[in-house]
Image 1 (cartoon, rainbow, N blue to C red):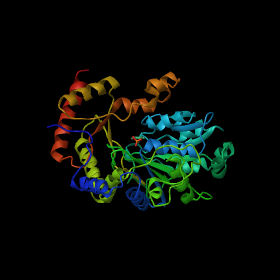
Image 2: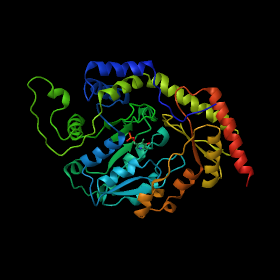
Image 3: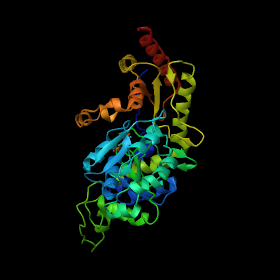
Image 4: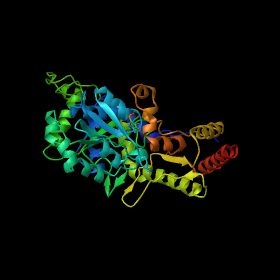
Length: 406
Ligand SMILES: *Cc1c(COP(=O)(O)O)cnc(C)c1O
């Protein structure tokens, strides 16, 4: 029995939707992308969404829009995918890493210790799909002591007059916090539709705009769309209308737009997300939870509590009291059985580029502890119970064989 980690759900519906987009003659950004934006906004209960070619592009675009630059600091968890930190580097700013809690979310207590007059943005990550405690983060950035430290430089920074909370919600579409959905929990959130994510467009991402007064999110939407397409005042679709050939370039923008072929996948994925995808993912995670709960070595992830629920993007299992080396041996053994598991994530301070910049994993002990014991189990639509039974049985054997070899 061979088990993959996260294959996409490519069925007739997806193929037909993409075929229709191809046959329509309009393949780049157009009506399907605009419809997908509208449906995403409805799903999350906000008004303005910009679809792009990736979440990374979305995160960078918002940092640029806010005017983040050299000399500025951006606070983010040490335990995330490198995209979250790389975009800060692209802007010339300094990533300030913070350790995480037992649920893998950024420690708010530790955020408050590293805020300075250079801090412009906090980027919490909804690890595995579980929303962070946004009420606590939003009230921290609005607290008197933090407000008095804020040193605005650009027009948008002066208008917000506090630290921007930019949520890396790459995992959390469909996740819930106090009755609201991820995407609507803070100033700006960014989803990823990469091939392995809960809801895919092959590659893609979306910026969910939820900025407070005096910002007009409709105006910001227009501004971001222009920024995402060379700073050009007209998109390809409006330029094809007879006589509407003239356009202007108002800034040196980027090339980050989503195509209608991607949106054709996304529209099908979103339509069946709440009633098919999410329940299937939740079932899988609960099945693992029930099967593993009897083992002393299994440290099960928090995916739901009194005020929030995960989108069940990952099942980040930790093995109690193993070393990094022992965890690696467990993975090597289970891989021999043709079962694909994964590790989320190798902490950023352990990556060469960041190590060379002077970051040191020993400054983030919880991050290292969780990483060194973490094994993500497969979660995808179509994973069968007999496959999960097979997986758990083999995992048990592999863990016990490594523990007994001590
Ligand atoms: C996947 C991922 C991203 C990047 O998403 P892309 O759409 O591939 O750019 C960012 N942050 C986290 C935590 C991710 O897992």
